[in-house]
Length: 276
Image (tube, rainbow, N blue to C red; front, side, top):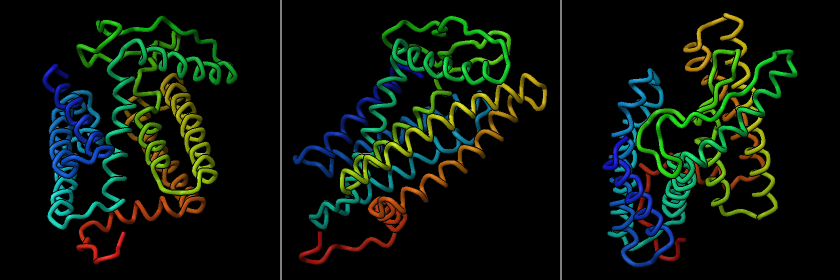
């Protein structure tokens, strides 16, 4: 992470957000925003390669072609003089979820506060399992309190376990996009709130259990931290998300329509007169 990549981060978010809520040059603004954010994600890939997280590194590299594809569809929207709800949904979901996540992740004081809450809840469960661990102080990795200057993880050691709960263990990287996607889906507010409660609460609890599982498997020497964290935990997270998506599809079919609409973008054609 450098000041230069953060310029890409905040500029891309601002452009995409303004393209979502504004009217002036909205397609051009979104196009540039997508490309800039794609470049930001590519710049993040080396960090994940360095820590051995191949999955997230691959996703970072895939962001540029994906976001460039969204930018191409904004070009088509401008060319065809249309603004489908799906394209607004995509732009709003990406910009707002990234704004929420990075407004916390880039401010060590906020990241440390959220990490402390998750660490406390994780340790409560471990205590209920009979473990006598205690929490250490928040470690900011050499960062000042009000803005990150490096990629050193902000975390809290669970003393006695050999494990440290870091900001990435808070699940905000899942909660922010999931909450935004559901909130921006056009549906009755009752069904929307129901979906939000189910998803956000379940993801948070599942993440606590994930943290507990990693501590347990590692502390009891059942498997290595790398296997527990990078393989077992990721597979479990995917299973939980798939189940939640199926539940939300049942409650809020409009969300299913949005997901299918994104997948079907290669088949997109110009809207006929009178289409919305």
